[in-house]
Amino acid sequence: MKTVYIAHPLRDNIEENVKKVDAICQQLHNQGEVIPFSPIHAFGFVDPKDDQTKVFEYCKVLLSKADELWVHGNWRNSEGCLIEIEFALQQGIPVMYK
Image 1 (tube, rainbow, N blue to C red):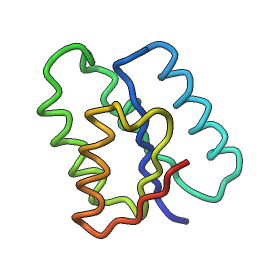
Image 2: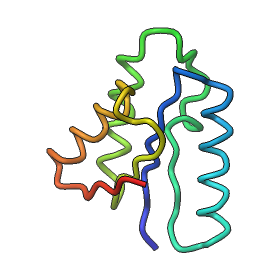
Image 3: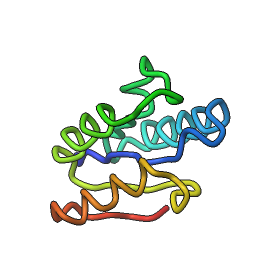
């Protein structure tokens, strides 16, 4: 079973975006074909309004262990998603735009 890193914008509408990522991960869990990994869930203890530099570094470490990066939502306006996409491409990790 492959591990999929789920990238999704967070900061533009935190509450709504967390719900969207919850639904994405729940659907993937129910399908049982991949292991979804969500940094939004993993690092929910960090206030998204604070400096994200350290969190972005955490994300790169975890993304480096994923089989694929799946990008959801309005990622073109998300600093975090753009960092994750660039990193994945540099590392040769397949990127899927959902």
